[in-house]
Length: 107
Figure (cartoon, rainbow, N blue to C red):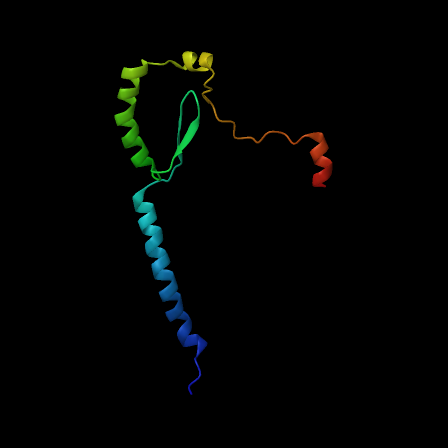
């Protein structure tokens, strides 16, 4: 029985593993950015699992927004804040500070 030479089989195994992974990565990049979408009503908040790509969600929103405005009327940011819907105007890149009682547990 012939012994398998690691020097000869290494590149072959690398090609058989690497090429499919590379193809998957290229397909993923070509399909566009991923996202998670929710719709919030006055009662609850539901995840829309049908949207996994930003392009799909934006296409849906462009169709849905005029219908919502027709039924509910236009809403300004001030009205949304007054109604209790909080709109994040600016995202803080810094994490919140660690409470003092937690610092002793981290050490």
